Image (cartoon, rainbow, N blue to C red; front, top):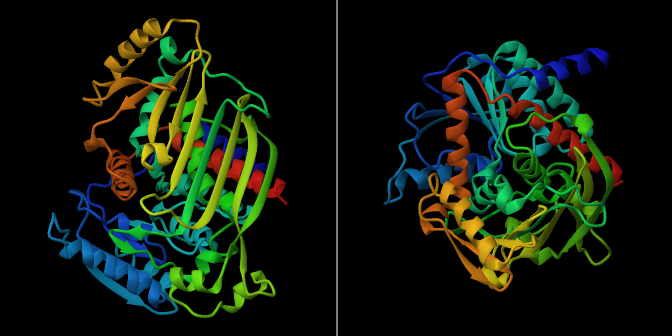
Length: 449
């Protein structure tokens, strides 16, 4: 245990260094979630178009290959991926033996993910993993070991944090850096946190213009993970990324205050609509009540402090979004001079919009002048961003060209990772903050029980 602590402290203190990679050859391991395909929604100049896929076979693989084929055959800017597929019970061993590529994309059954990640890193392969990398404390111990192995073997382990590329979050973070508008980050309290992230998701939705068919194991928290250990990965990451930009964080700087979990109910008809399957698999039957209704622990919430800042996280899953809506996100950062609030409800047409709510003693005219000066600096990176007065304060106006959508963010994450590989080094805070993020979530997991 002491050796592990010393090694993890070293990881937190030193930037990740690896051999520069000029040509990336992708390996896709057991793709069982649609996120695996979204990494390939576009081509990349340094990535070989031949992708080796290793899988046990079955419907998950079939759906993955169909999605890749849809990208290759679309009318607008089609991709040119060439899949080389191996199926068999020894798919993992086969991939590790052949090493047909140098970067493994992992997105699928979360119960297997930590073991897959560790095995790949131990084999000297770089890993780009979908969230969450760990859904239980036992998984987290494997991930800690994987980061140590990655350091020793000179490879990069990285998780796919798409929400950093949502324009509303980018601008919320940017405005919080302007003291003339935001002031300083408040500490808040457990009853009145200084930062809040709330997310509502839906099981039935469309992806790439088609109804998303989810595998039945997506309903099994032992395979997908509870809500408190899944989507919360994004929200904890955003809190770290926005409140402490460019800073390496340590798990000891986190204090977990309270955590809870609760279930969402699903009827057999709803289960069939999402999965296409008439009967519950045996592993889900213990979750069904006498009326054959499933009760799944896909919801979670927790309060904690990070470097003294009180934060609140909440994730809720429902069956299907109202017509014209979709997954929603609420985010509030409170400074001494203003609150920066992202809303995504009916009034926003279910699109994320950033608002600035004044808390200083400045007049509206004086505050708006300071806000426009701050935006004048931000628009150097985001031309066209503007502001207008509204009932709650000021609304940040964002050109449509920056609203690329969730699916496009996977390519943006991939491009960031490819840049790290080409440079042979990763920003010094990435690894320690991944460890701090998963440590935070595992503490909430423990406390919720």
